Image (tube, rainbow, N blue to C red; front, side, top):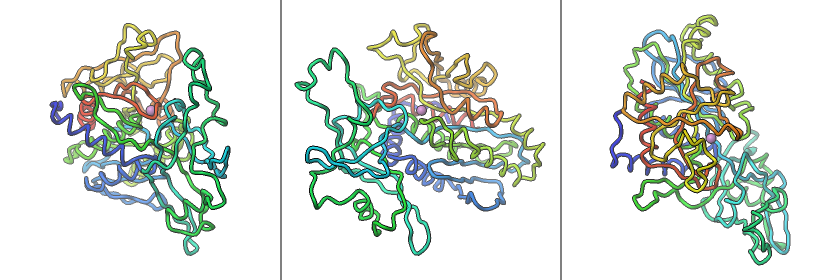
Length: 431
Ligand code: CO
């Protein structure tokens, strides 16, 4: 893939906006990725069966996580991976959510991940997720998404919170975040009944739900010169979209002994430790099964991992124009300034001089500038899936991403050109 021109960057950004808009939950993000992979000729393999895999494109999913890979014609000797995450911080419906206060029926919510809580106030909120229900003696999963503004968390008026602008907004996660659902009264259906109506089943047949809120405002291209993308879940659906785009576009004359893999993980925002998170066994077991399907024994599989490389793609902090002092002054990061390589000597990022090289070469091939991120030495550093995936698999890994502002806000901001350039770099990296 060559470096994209402005017109193709704009078209790419609009495609990204469609992908994000269709993916309000990790389950929907996987569905969105699967639709594109199927269109690209990839075939699903079930996680609970044994695999016989020929050369070509395959994918396996588990809840909000997905691993897709293209196998070479020639004998498999190594993997080239891109990792990203499907989840974003949000508010999630509790198991017994029905409550009311001051004549208003509300829903109880839990905070998922590092939410910028203030950004969820005064927004028109929808809901999405999955329902598990009994259907003729079988358990069945149904995804649902309501893009109508059915919920709202109003902020307290300034007249009742006079020193808020001097003291700052203080929000208690238990007391202050229950969204308004409707006026309370005897006819208000329980959440379970409402959900049953939505997925067309009896309330008693619902076994459980993984339900979460989202902003119903659609993603938009903004700024005087229309050079920014304003959207929910840029962290990290931007990287998921770029990875899927790159894998679908990668060359299919795969006579390289190398399998191209993308791993899109759920649960990054809560530490990645789960049956399908980056700090679990999901990716490792998939790679082991892929190797076995290609006739590799355990020693050959371990040799393949030792020869492999991984790009961990997650958004990076651009330098905030109003808070430039929060950033490392010698490492400014500009929106639309090119992909960011993230470094942290305490290995909060997996990058080192050697693991950065394959990504830097991909950037050089398409002729893009690269930006280097380190956090201020007197501030704590964030982290991502790179270090945990590297530790789980023993694969050399580099942490990279597109720069953004307002990370973990309900509405984040990134650059139009950056999104397209990043997908091109990932395409170049894969092959
Ligand atoms: Co992230």
